[in-house]
Length: 184
Image 1: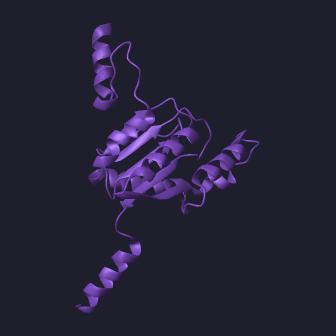
Image 2: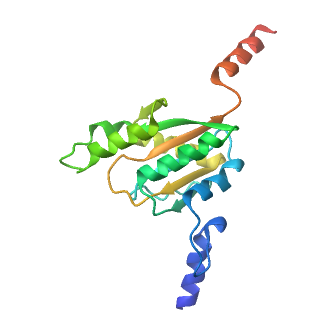
Image 3: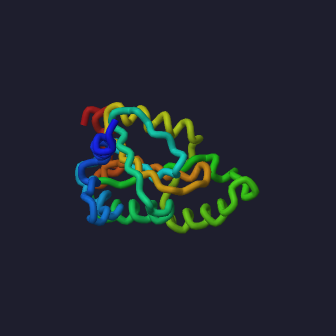
């Protein structure tokens, strides 16, 4: 296979809005998320993953590799989501993250502190990693998942954002369902 054919094949794997010509700067992560976010809605996901995260094969999962740090990518996604009126995130973390010892993953304590600071007072659901992967795999069969893969090299540090409707609360949905059940 010739070098030029390899380049063409590689270029075909790069998402269209993320492809760049020689000499052009790569779009920022903020720009990438801002461009994708208007098309995303409830039941879509955004994931900020570490470098060992697997390349999933569900048709709806789009993987984009970035050079941003893990915490920087999380902050960028949160900032873009905060600007959005149509979606809000339900945040999932791997339950295992709380149990990863510093001796096996130097710097993990600092990462946990930084992540806690980045997430602030937002509610977080902790599930076992395999359970979150199963949720993503299932979602990716029918809905888009934007997976942002960073060069981060610590285990169980991926952050998962399941998008919900931003202008309709869980309580509003429950109220409506109760009304439907009562015939009102």
